Length: 143
Image (cartoon, rainbow, N blue to C red; front, side, top):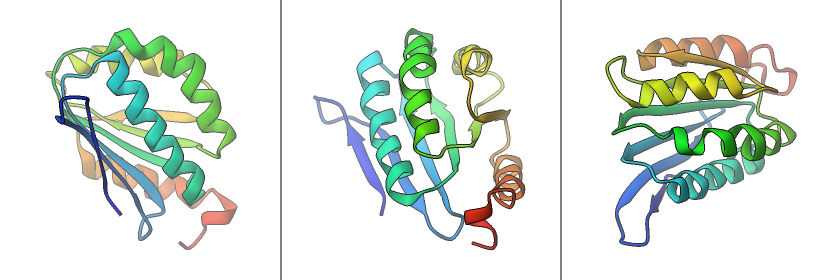
């Protein structure tokens, strides 16, 4: 079931859902992201990872406006260890090549440890990569 995450003003900044047909969690981040929105949304996503047992995350930043490097340290030091503890192994990160969000994504890619992260500009390539990777996870084989 798709969850819509909104800020205190009611503005939608993230839709997230577990996709059982693919056995991954899909995030679609929208607009400008504050530190608080990133923390809130990432924690909702983490709940889905934990509840689903999914080792794969498809994180879509194509609709993000502006940089979000103000949260990279928190993602690396706080969220990532919790995500790994809940089974996250593969993180496909989709971002537009010409966006300011790409700079933040590259910074995150350099700082996170514990799961394999790859950046994509094409969502279909990201899905193909995740489909190949999830076959390496024994509990997800054939799902």
